[in-house]
Amino acid sequence: MKRKVAIVSVFVLLFVVSLFAQSSASDIAALMAQASSGDPEAQNSLGVNYFYGDGVEKDLEEAVRWFRKSAEQNNEIAQFNLGICLYNGYGLARNLDQAVFWFSKSAENGYANAQNRLGLLYESGRGLTQNYALAAYWYQKAADQGHLEATTNLAWLYEHGMGVPKDLVKAISLYQKAADKGDAYAQYSMGWAYHFGIGNLSKNLATAKTWYMLAADQDQPEALYALGVMYEEGEGVDTNFETAFDYYLKSATLGHMDGMIAVGLFYELGIGTDEDAVEALAWYLKAKEYGNEDAQEYIDDISSSMSPEDIERARKKAAHY
Image 1 (cartoon, helix red, strand yellow):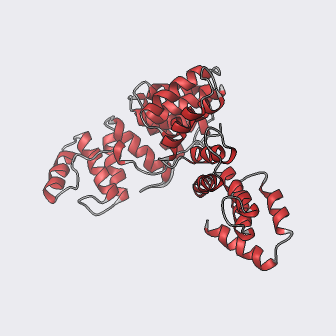
Image 2 (cartoon, one colour):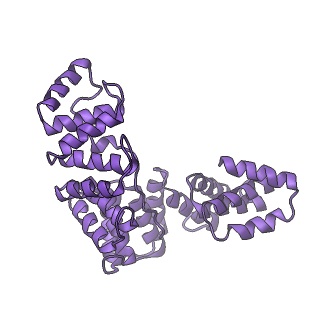
Image 3 (cartoon, rainbow, N blue to C red):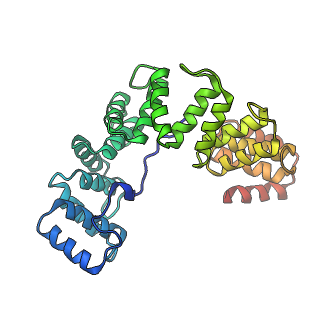
């Protein structure tokens, strides 16, 4: 299975809870007093308030200042937050080396979100030398604390034998843990495992569909595409081209390249939807933009029988998809 290594570039409120929700003026005054007296938790929370403009005027530079004060007192959440700011250039110049430094500090202090982030950086090779073994090490640390994304990331490494010995049974066990707690990619992976009878699992299309549906309900693009395949091929369900098209289209709008090609084919052939060469070409063009290696062949084939005006219309549509 393909998987994107996603380095999330946003603050996540779940990770950086302020001491006060929807802060009032008195809340902020009390928090400022605590922070000014040197309380590291208050300093981190005040940084969050400045980052979001909660009870104070939004000021990313001030947020960074308070995160740094707290981080220098070894507050692991503030260290993570400062790493986020440095990684993305929030409130100061982007500095990947310093971001890695603070992520590492936070991870070493046991913060699961930082451990997972450090694993992602080692897996992707962003900001440091790519090292799958160290990625697995940090994912394991976070997974041991119940971190869902890290559990799924570790499972993927076991599935592909990257940084750890390939072990499909271990991978499925980890996917199961994360899937049971709602991780969408893990749910898709369980669907895939049942779909094809991977590891210690027997092929079971009904169970595969159940897992795909759970992931699709969270807009997981691979699961949406897999459901499209099931309905197109009649695997475990009655063949239904209209339903297949709907799933392919949903996956395509979420950036799934194979979904884009499938939507283009359905439009080109009039399967599950009205025949529309302009729409077909638009989706082929979008797939090429996303890096699909087969897209050019589809583009050349369909555009050879289209007018220049229709080709231009398709290009304009693709630009807006």
